[in-house]
Structures are given as C-alpha cells and as structure tokens.
Picture 1 (cartoon, rainbow, N blue to C red):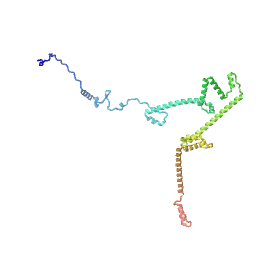
Picture 2: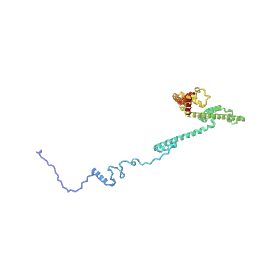
Picture 3: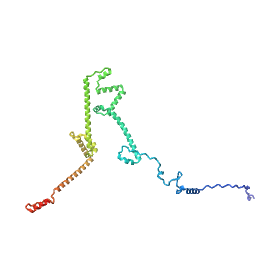
Picture 4: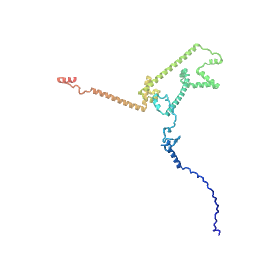
Length: 350
C-alpha cells in the first residue's frame, strides 16, 4: 500500500578534500586585559611612580590632583594703577592706594565726566560774558530803562529783522515810531534824504547838549555806585548776622524774614533802625511765628533761666556762709570782769 511506503531522502556523496591549516583569527583583547596592561606600564614607569592611575595628564605629565593658584586664575596682565583725581584731598592718598582698581577706574571716569561737563559750562559762560561785556558802556541806559541785557537784546533783534525783511509799510511804520520815540528832527531827516546839508545848529547848543549828556551819565553812574555800595554793605551785615551762633535758626526762617522785611506794616516803623537792628527784629518775629521754633526757643530760655537762678542761689548761699557767725566768734565779754577780758585777748592773738 502507498500509505506505508517510506521514501528515503536523496543523498549525495560528499567528496573529501584535503584540509588546509589556516590560523584562526585572534580574539580582540578584553577591556580587563587593556586595563591590566595599562596598570603594568604605569607601575613600571619611574616617572609615574606615586601617581594615581585616575590622575589626569597635562602635556604628557600628570596634572595636580587639586587645583592650584596657577591653574585656577589665568595669567592675565595686571591693570595699571589709576592716579588719584585732583578733586580729592591729599589726606585720602592712602585710602586711594588701598581701593580696588574697579572703584578707582569708576571714580576716575566719573571725575573725567564731571570735568567734561564743567568745560562745557565754562565755554557757555565765556560766550555769555563776551555778550554782556558789549553792554558795559551802555549800562546806564539799561538802568534808566530798568531792564537787563537779556531783555534788551530781543527788541533790538526784532527791529533789525523787521528793517531787513519787512514790507515797505512795516519798515516805514517802524521808522516813524523810532522818530517819535527818540524825538528825531524830521527836517534834518528830510535834508539828508534830499541830498542837502542840514542847517547847522549853534555850536554853543551842541556843547551844552554834550555837557548835559555827560552830566546825566555821571549822575547815573554815581547812583549806580552808591546802590552797589549799599548792596555790598547790606550783604556783609547779613553774612555776619547769619554766622552769629545766637541766630542759629537763620536758614530756617530766612524766607519768612524776607516776607516781613517786604511788608513794613508788620514790623512797624523801622526808619530809624540800622540794617542789623532790622534783621534782628525780622528774625525774632519770624521765630515767634513758627510754632515749632517758638516752642524750642521757649524751652531753651527756660533752661537758661533755671541755670542762671541756680548760679545766683549758689552765690547767695556762699555769701551767707562766709558772713554767718561761727563757733570762733568773740562772745559778749563783761568788761568789768578782768579775767574774762584777758582770756578774750589771748584767744584773739591765738
């Protein structure tokens, strides 16, 4: 039957070939072998004796186990010392030398910025001074007009701009205004415009006019000098008054003092007082009007009065002690008792 048949597998006859002896590939060294060899080399090298196997190397040499100052900080060039600014006092020289360089550089930079800013202000001040010096010959005009150089410049520039860029109507109106303001003779202006020489006035009149003008300037100059002298004297009195220790609250009440001096009806009649007396009156009034200062001043006065009273009582007590009868005072002697009189005389001669 087909079901019980067993088919044998096909087999092929193997041909035996001669074996060639090929060397087997060497196995790679294990990690343990590599470590063992490294340890053996390290221990055999005399330069590495005493070194830890895990110690790192630097340029073929073992690096130190712990970081030293040389390995921690890079070799950077030392910053130059900064000279002490001239704005500091010489007594601070030692403190400046001990200060950190960062602080020195910051302070020097701040000082340089300050000097730079001051130089800019100096330049502006020089420019302003050059302008104000141009007004010096005409200072008496400014005083008569009760104006300042800054206030006088604007109208002058406005008039100059109008005469250069204004319309004919604006120019003629400006000229007419100046003729009326400064009383310029129109007939002489017409003569100049017509090309004819104006009528010459009497020479005596011109000389008199010049003398009057010079006299006016001289009087104005004297008034100005007198005013400056009074201002300087008053300023000196104020400085002396403020520096007096008795007026220690001057800075605190200076504004109120100014208000009182500008309102004479509060202080009363001060026409017969000197500058010092007026300042003292204004100072005392200003202190009394300030509640806090008035209370402080009252407490000081009370303490001073108590101290004075104590001193007076001590003096009175001392006088009483010196004048009081003591145990060595001469008793009342009966002049008829000869022995008592002699004994008293002996006690007196001690």
